[in-house]
Image (cartoon, one colour):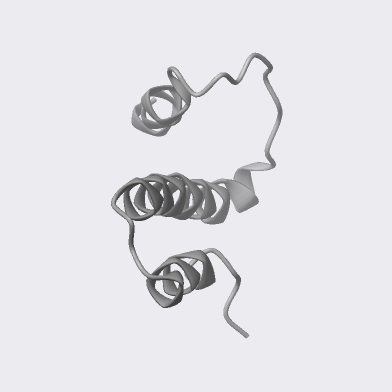
Amino acid sequence: MKMVQGVSKMLKGSGVDFIFGIPGEALAATLEKLQVIFEVEEAMEKAIHGGAPVDKIKAIIARKKPKK
């Protein structure tokens, strides 16, 4: 139940207006990816509004890309 509440908090106010299903075995990885996405989006917004250099913004975006 804690994970569901965590997802609910992450999505609250995000404009998401739908529900989707995630297989149980993929839930932890999916939640981690969602957390990274939200953190990157917030950091990008702050960097852009703060007038950060392009290199810093690129470094923030790179965190969203999967590591190989």
